[in-house]
Amino acid sequence: MPAELDLNKVRASFPALSRGQVHFDNAAGSQVLGSVADRVRDYLLFPNITNDGYQAAADFINASPDDIVFGSSTTQLLHNLSQALSFSPGDENLLSPLDHESNITPWLSLANCQNLTIKWWHPDTTTSSSPHLSPSSLPDLLSPKTRLVCLTHTSNILGTIHLLPSITSTIRSLAPQALICVDGVAFAPHRKIDVKELGVDFYVFSWYKVFGPRVSQLYASPRARSQLQSLGHFFNPSETLDEKIGLAGGWCQELIYGVAAVVGYLAPRWEGIVKQEGELQRVLLGWLNSRKGVTIYGERSDDTETRVPTVSFRVEGWGARELVEAVEKETNGRFKIRWGSYYSVRLTKGVLGLDGEDGVVRVSLVHYNTVNEVESLIEAVEKVLAEGKR
Image (cartoon, rainbow, N blue to C red; front, side):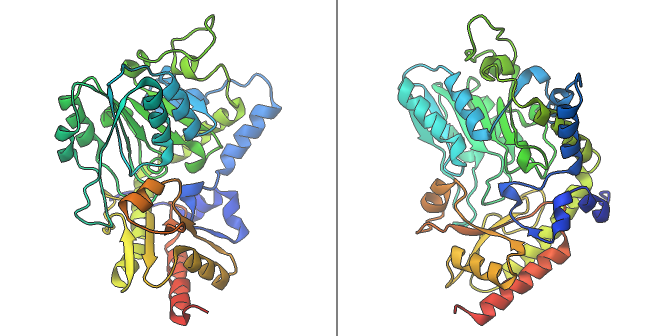
């Protein structure tokens, strides 16, 4: 049996949880560990501290420090990465409309600058509200000209987990020359990451969504790193990923130092985290699946092998925004749920077919949330729906 989390100790590790609000929008930014703040403070106040954040961050994904670089955001890192790649006119890049725009726009811009061909990996929509990328469609999309394949590990709206080892092995067999770039932002807070087991060339995520400081991290495999041009000054070293695309920034050393606290916190808790999150999504999805007039966007099952507890839905007769605002009013702003497209407009409009600007209602949970909090949210939504629009 997976180890149980001591939720009292877990919640005591996050100072913000003592302030009375219930955080159901963790996909936009999780709460920060108190130990992270302590390390950031120590680095700023005490000189000559050896920065072990680089090694800890590399260990977190089973990589070498030479193969990672930090930056201000996932968006910034992917933009930098795109500027360091050089392909030939007519080469093909494969993109997915399920992605956050961060893993789409840089590649469209690169294609425009280098006269590349963009192909779209459209999802399997057998169940229209639960689209997912299927390896079975890859033979028709990949070719000897394919140089880059981009996808999300987990959509920040759907919560469905793409089984990367199966996908990457298919890509390797059909287009071994292709580089594989994965956005792991919505996956990283929920599961252990091993970039070697996943078989990826690039993997990127943001630590401020993984209980840490506002800094992001990009991995490049040794194979991929050797293909990158350096963006740095010609006289500077250009061996490591940081030297190639970090732009000599020495980026926020105090924040990188704080990352080690997150790694130390998560390492012994992964089994308990998965078990706790499974219970949270069981309660929420059980209610959503049982209620008439509710459309769930993403995997309807609460199986932790197929989804994380980022749950999006709409209720018939209600706009996403008006339902969220009604719940906030009912709870005096205590419950923080959100509405929107979350920088995934190609998904909400183009794939899910949602009109308007308000997208979906999203409840994004992490392991420090409690079943009682979820049940209280359900009660609040039920009360709003029972009273109807005013």
